[in-house]
Image 1 (tube, rainbow, N blue to C red):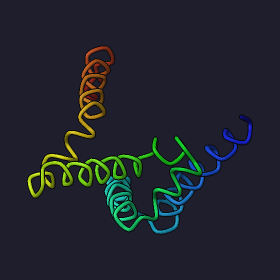
Image 2: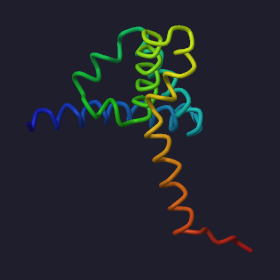
Image 3: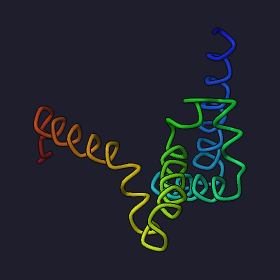
Image 4: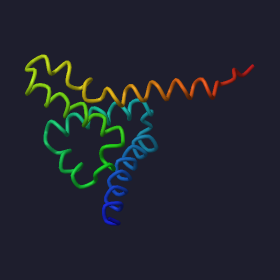
Length: 120
């Protein structure tokens, strides 16, 4: 069990390290890093490269933003098998609906609880 925690920490930490290098040394802004990571997660999943990373690193690979791209791609691939061409448009949204709904809900709650004050 300890080895599993080490693998999760290693994979998640490596993903975060790469993002930090992109922001610090290449001066890439956070939104660009996020879009790059989601896109990389989708592309690596379709190429079959990200699945072994997920099997090795578990939630260290699925929890960061690349995991969102992985979930999108897996949803599309599964939906294409069942719905055909229409699965291209439905699969990603269906697979990630719970995460999207949670992000909206908790974002709203945090905005209500911690209302920012305008600076004069």
